[in-house]
Image (cartoon, rainbow, N blue to C red; front, side, top):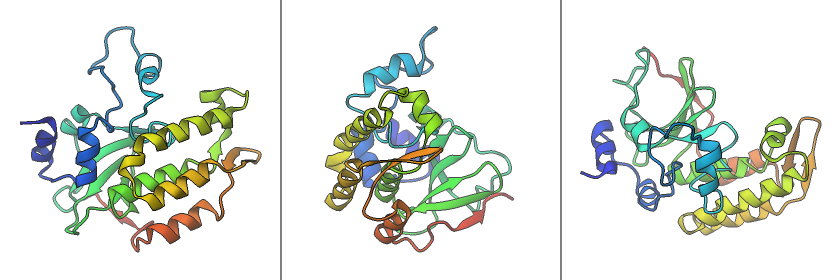
Length: 231
C-alpha cells in the first residue's frame, strides 16, 4: 500500500486528482530528502529549506509566514481534539498555521470537497471551494499586506521586497504546470506589480484590490462563512 493509499484509508477519504498529482510529483513534500524526525543538530530552516528554495514545493513562500504543509506522517498520525465533532464534520487535515489552526478538506457531501480553516476555538471558516482555488487564493494573497516585521526577519532590510518577489516567482514556476492558465496569468501580473508600502506592511500593485479579485474569480457562495465544529 502506498503512502497516499494509507492516508486515504486512515481518513476514509479519496483525495482530489490535483492533490494526488502534486503528491506523486513531490510538490507537497516540504521535507525534501530528509526524514522525520530530523537528525540531531539539524533544523528545517538551516538544513532542509536551502535544498528546496530554488525548486520549491507547493506554497513554500506563497503560503505565508505562518503556513506549513503537513507531512504524510503528520496527516497519518493526526489526532483530532476531543472537542471536535468528527462524527458530524469529516475533516481531512493537510496544513497548519503557527497559531495552531488547521487547513483541511471538508467532506460535506459535495462533489468537490471545499477547503476550510479550522480555528483553535469552536469554529471553522470556508476558504475555497476546491484545492486548486485554495492554492490560487493563497498565492494571490501573498502579494498583498505583507507584514514588515515578518518580511525583515526573512529577507533583511536591503531590498527585501525584490528578494521576496524572486521567491514568489519561484513558487509560481514550480506550480505553473498544474494550475489553469487564468490563475497563472493573474499571479504573473500580481508578482510584477510595483512595490507599495504602508507603516506596517508591503504589497504589490494589482489592477483591483486582492480581496476583490478573489471574490470575483473564485465565486464561492460559502466563502467566509463560519460554522461551529465542536460538540
